[in-house]
Image (cartoon, rainbow, N blue to C red):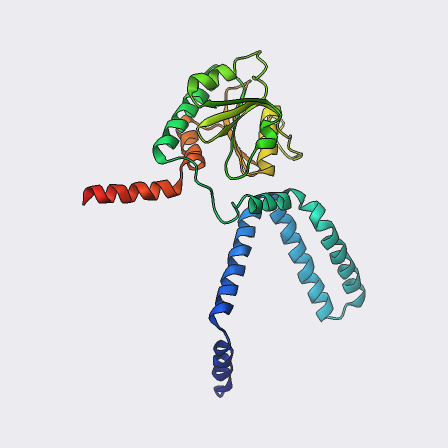
Length: 279
C-alpha cells in the first residue's frame, strides 16, 4: 500500500493553527473535567453518569443503522433525562457549588501547622480510645473545606480548645450533649449536641444504627470527616464521601485524621526551614 504523503501535511497544517491560548484552553478544560470526576468518583452519581453515557452510545448506534423507531424513543428518553438530571444529581451539584463558592474547588484550604495537627490528633485519638473502651457512643464531625455553620447552629455553641478530657466531658452519658454530634474546626470544638441528616441509602447493613447513618448522611452532603464510636460494641468508624470505614484501631484512626488537620503549605515551609538549618 503506497504511503499517503498528504496525511503528515494535513496533520502539520492542523498543528500550525494551534496557538498558546488554545493549549491553555485545553488544559483548563481538562483540569475542570478531572475535578468533576474526582468529586463524582466513589459516589452514586458516577453509576448514573455511566448509565447516561451508555444510553447516548446506544442512541448514536441506532441512528447510524437508521433504526428510526428505537432512535426516536431513545432521543425522547435522553431529552427527559437531561431535564431530570438536576434533580437526580442534586446532592452532587450542591456539593460542587459549595466547593466553588468557598474557593475549595481547586484545592484544600490551610488549617494547622504540623505540630498543631499532631497535638489535636493525639487528643482526639486519646478521647476516642477512652470512649471506645467504655462503650460510650459519640459522633465527632471534623470540618474541612466546606463550612458547617448550619450544622453547628442546631446544637450548643462552645468554642473551646480541643483536649481529650474536654471531649470526654462532652460525651458523658445521660447529659444533653451526649446524643448529638460535636463539630470540630481546626483545634477548637465549636459546637456540641448538633443534629445530622440521616442517609437515604437503603442498602446499608442493618447493624448500622442511627449514629452511623447520621455520619454517612452528613458525609454524603459535604466533605466533612465523621468519627463514630458505637454505643453497643465500642467499635470505631469513620465516614467520608458517603462511605464508612469500620473496626478501626487507634493507629489507623490517627493516620486517617492527620490529613484532615495538617496543612500541606506549612509542611513545605517546615521542609525549607529544616533544609536551611542543615546548611
